[in-house]
Length: 328
Ligand code: UFG
Image (cartoon, rainbow, N blue to C red; front, side):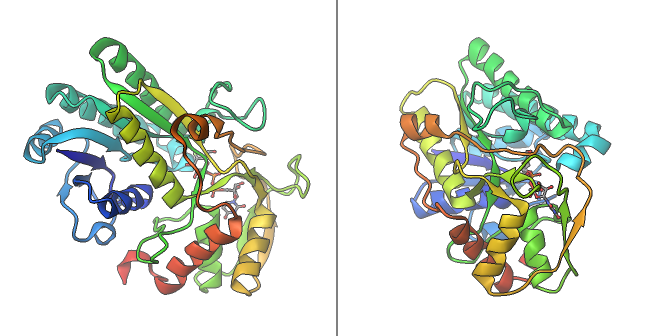
């Protein structure tokens, strides 16, 4: 029996694949390599295919005797989702429906799903718990919320059991330095700061210095990608043990402003970073901090990387040794 990992060659998917492999679990990665990297899952079974290809999904499930799924494959850029909503609704929503159709056909009834803090939109309270109002401000967030709702309906009608994990800001890289974050184009704060350190960009733009926060810049909750990976495995094992469908937040519960993140990178690397203050980026909430109490209490999840310094250290280890990402 094996675990199908859709989007398993991507950033969070590949880190989860590495942890599962380290535990000796049987896995098969399913990725169309539009954003994922073959090099991130070297030596692991990889089927190159699209989520919309229901029959290839079914064939893969038969061939590898799949009995559960971890579903990462999705478009995930907030800005792009606003200019190309069709891409997000087709790839994320229709793609998930195609996967669920294959699962139903093959009687695979357990799935761990990557959801997002973007399902909440502008938060009504901090920290954000799972019961907080869901009012996504982007098409990306809306597409993920729709996917959560589809899972609920499939649970009620067909007995599909799921865990939806709403991540806050995934960051860092594998402790080995062998795999890490590699997006093209890159839009996330920490990897962009790394590109400045590597001389690939002249400066870091700080998007907005007039937010209602102590230093005026946005506050986010950064969680290490391997801590996220462990949460997926805990969630999957709970489903194997018969747990009912659940939704969990995943963050460290600490907020850091954009300026604090840049300061911490300077401290960890001993290098100075040129910063330029710019206008706000559209759609950015001022503060996003998770309450992860539910997954801590119910599944015993514990973050292994508790400080921003440790998270940034692993990111720097990856980026400094792979300045061109997986292209080297
Ligand atoms: N930022 C900058 N300069 C940059 C890049 C980012 O100041 O060059 C700021 C952003 O404005 C934001 C913070 O750094 O305040 C973090 O930005 P990221 O792009 O790294 O991450 P986001 O918080 O925008 O995005 C994350 C996830 C998304 C998810 C979103 C929910 O990566 O998948 O949270 O709001 F949808």
